[in-house]
Length: 289
Image (cartoon, rainbow, N blue to C red; front, side, top):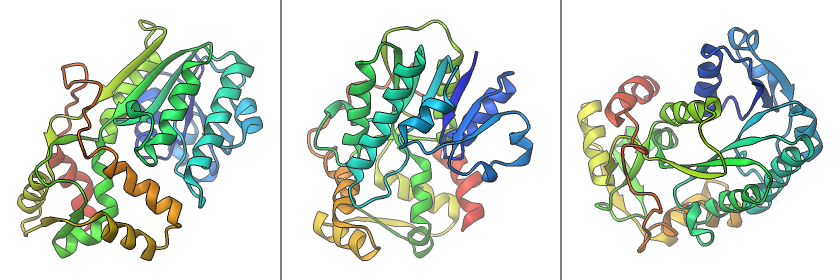
């Protein structure tokens, strides 16, 4: 089985690559920077310098692939949804040109809304486009990454987190390593076909109040969280250098899933994964603080 993996240095991809290697697979890694792949990993993979937003490059890199793990790369321009559309065009072109039989796509809780969820709308468009391809597709609807707290490291140090979400509204939180495990199983399994949605919800739903409490207990110092207005959060994004459309897209991922949103997939044994936030904080956040 020839498996292609995009964003292999990402939060999920770096775990997924090693899992596939341990399973005896020699994955094809599509990356803009092959030189950044650790030497110990590079000797077990096929590296192809590829920009995931360039269809011709993706088609060339995935020639002969049976399965592809597709991740839309993070938006980089002043028009984030346009970036997602370019990535969508690339994966569709590759699937059709190379007759790739199966795709596992890293999507997000909220993609089922289809419109009105900021940057997640880009993932929705990719889901729809892949569903229209002649390939078997699994969409991984992932919860809120633990690793998003890494972007808040300075706020954690100062002891104050801010969000536009209600502080006592529970949502799914998940470790990227757990997503990689679900992805690896889907890539290696021949027991599914057609269009399939697989939610990845982490071990439990958590509120921001609970997250602050866990951080406080694990770090040994108080970490509070406060809710701020949408306008104030957007202004912070702009001050950080985000273009207006990017600020709106990032903010929309929270505001679009805030009011009366109910995930399409209920939490179940199928969607629940094991890694606890506490253990992730000890292993990955604390060493960086």
